[in-house]
Image (tube, rainbow, N blue to C red):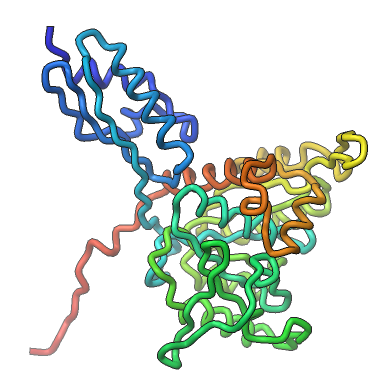
Length: 362
């Protein structure tokens, strides 16, 4: 009895992508299914980077299809393809950048920059081309966290070549000033400098550009949210009420300008004593869940208050590269995959498919 495409699709409906919660048929991930006697071939394309997930998924597909009566051979390929997605109305995409992710918080001191750099490194570890823009003009920290020294090169005198750190393309005002030099600038100057860093950097074929936003919800942040083509925002908070209150304001700011909230990361969620192993919620418990429920958002993950994270990041080797098999790196990668899945579920950008219409007097 010959195997049918319908039998193959039925088997694939039982293969659930753990990152999306959907089967390979309803998500339209499975394509080009071909049946030749007992041989089955197909392609599975994921809309998010999943380097560590591709082979396990291929094996699950193979196992599911070989259980179909009559199937004697299976040839399945599993790949990732990341495409641009829609941004705010009237804001054009940045050349060389498919998707921009803003990592923000309502206040400082919640570990936003640490989360941003590890999120970027985790996306890169899953196979994406990633860059990071340090948008905190007053307090740039990414040069230290990435262990990058020196100044960016300018080949044409008009644009910057991105600096490189652990495989990430990066730019920051911190590359252009002395580490102890304060930026005594008013808001318009800061906004102008940041736009130059963003638009005058020659980003090279980035799937994602992580923007480490300055803390707060003032004029600078609002101007950036209106002028930078942001695909979605990640809100970083700690569990205590004062941080949640300010983080909620940050979330509302993005919503006002039509930027989707990808989710909430609760940092410093739990502390584990390095001496005895005792775990304690020193900043409170369940804060991110309450915030998410009140605002219709998703909790992307919880990160511990861990001295190793601070030490490794301050040394220029964040946990994702310093200890890639460690618990912290695993948490960051899980959050990164969830962020990428949330972006993949957004409306795709179609502007590149339309020709430019030029009206001339004839």
